[in-house]
Image (cartoon, rainbow, N blue to C red; front, side, top):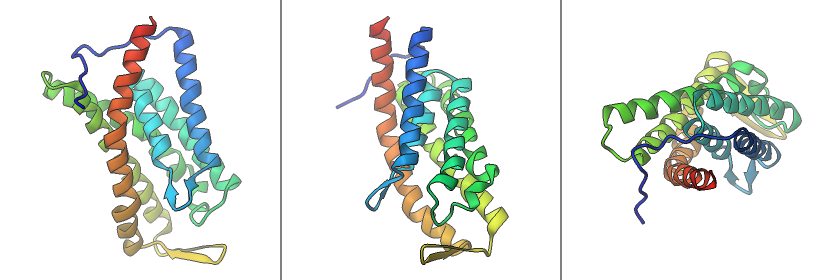
Length: 202
């Protein structure tokens, strides 16, 4: 099924709509804190999708706000639901800053792509923004962990991991690839659908 989106995809929101959408996005992020994984499947892509949607649907400032909320949830989760790398996420430069940068990266990547190729369907810019969002989050989080904890061995409940290049390669080839694929595929149709719903509701 081909997804079509009009060239003029700007959406205007009422105050009630903004409150409802932000409440829903924040609730989705909080759910990630409660259920970070289902069995072996990690759900880290869910809050990333929420930040992407916030930025593309409402704008840069809202994307930054949602990213900041995601960061606060990550920071709180490192204390409330400890895991192997929780100690690293006690540092706001690891837990908060990369999440804030997601919205900024999405905004400029997607808008830049639309300006470069104005005749192309905006859906492609949503996909580009989504890919850039995951890459930004991954590189900043892993980069900050390397900066502050390179050579450190984290231990939790009998499990341990050494922060080094082998660990980075493993994360990039597993979780990061999955997040990139999922976000790039599922986010554009969600944004298109939400914009249509909002326009019809006005």
